[in-house]
Image 1: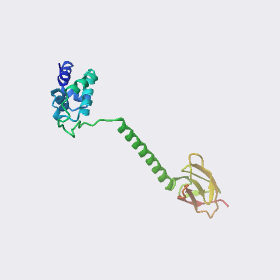
Image 2: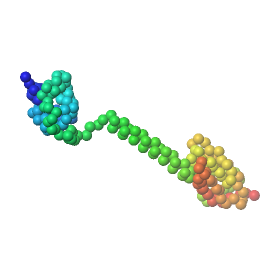
Image 3: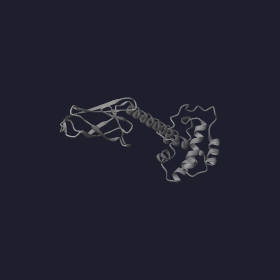
Image 4: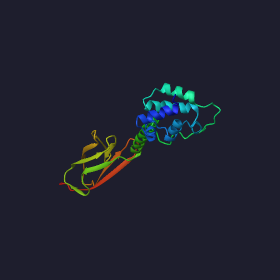
Length: 209
């Protein structure tokens, strides 16, 4: 009658598997596989661990795990046999669902923190402000001029102390009355947090009296 070691070894050879094939397919070190085939129990871990090894090897070889465990139970030495208390089961990295969960959770947390960080920086930063018209040092020959620009959509715009309406994209156009004494157009954008961006345009007003 075959022993468990002989049975597994013969099955492996019949299937034309090497010890390395078994190691790769079961994640059990080939030294342990060889020790089971040779029944070198003193070089193997505790009986429950060896039982798990035998089940995995049997399944990989398309053998009946219950039959193999029964053979192991018959052939395994008495409990008094001293075996390795801390075997090196495998030094290979194995990706597990638990690791996937923790990495996924960490990525979600990192994304949330990054988003909140960007939102905070955006909140405390002065708003963007671009003035298209008038240009600096522009000569004005009419009393009514257009002030055209762009800012952040949630900002407030004030032109020479006059509030301006902006559209959903932050664009604004405001008509402003000037006089011969006007020498500067002041445009201010104020964010929700109260941060300000100020742009000034020096102008030369030349009106026909």
